[in-house]
Length: 247
Image (cartoon, rainbow, N blue to C red; front, side):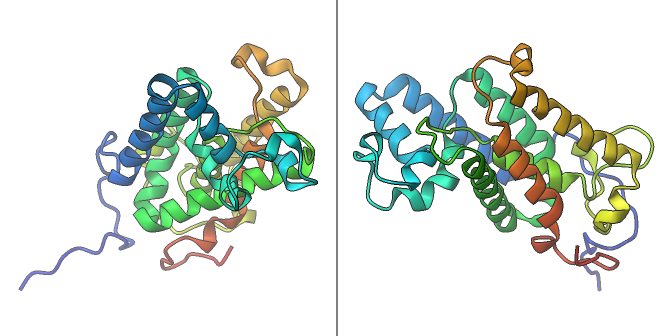
């Protein structure tokens, strides 16, 4: 009689192939690209404007009703903190987010499974929108992009996929490793350097000095909100394994 091996056994096995991305990652990228292609290249100006009004996150619309918000669908404020991640500004914007989704989302998706991964990504997007709103409550410009969710995946990957020494490879991360407590993670020099680089880059964006890294406005607030949620709250979504802490 044979039994199937337990994928979460503490016994170390060879990591999966580097480019064997989970189906949920490939599906997510296809959806993002399809929505962008339709909105930019197939939809006319009126339909494109409808997409932005009803899917983008607009902080100022949560206050007193402004003229700019009057044409939105009823109840739109309930879903836009998540749906704004479906929209992107241009090919570079969606290309970078798709790349980071592939790199950082792969180990998280392998560890969580498809349903938990999608729930975690949505929660990361909402967390990014929440911090953006706190800092820019009256802004009527639309916020778009999957960067809040991707940043949450970066924060989550920091909790288990960064080695203490050696070469970093998120695509080959050992998903069976127990989740380290936050305090222990912060004694890992690799994690500290990664977190510092993330916050440092977004600090440049916040001061306007990051223009050389990309054109257009960057929603660094959503990046920070998503990353903080992913780093601090990943344990709430993690599959419990022997040795895993609550936080």
